[in-house]
Length: 104
Image (cartoon, rainbow, N blue to C red; front, side, top):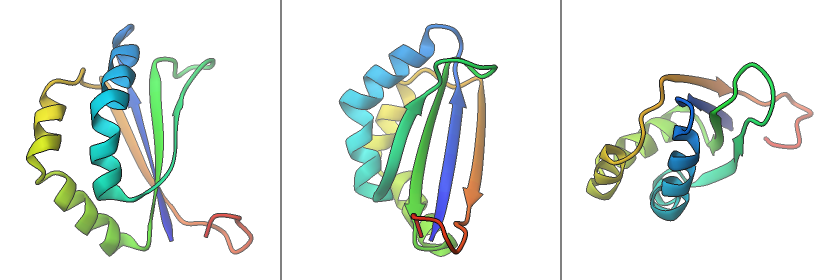
């Protein structure tokens, strides 16, 4: 298993708009394609305020690539993406669990 950590930083005020729109319209599309949702988070304190973090689990790198390709080919997602506030910064990391991790 691999876990993808995606961090989107928004301009002041945009994170609330993004979360509202994503909850109402986007999350069901993402879950349909990406599958194993581990969690969504918002930062409350620290140097990276106005940040939206989500974690997705995939079987392996090939599974992730195939799922993301289908995701970005979905006209419903493409329409949704054009109406969202854009992040001012994005950071993605692919994480592999340790042998003793409860998520494997």
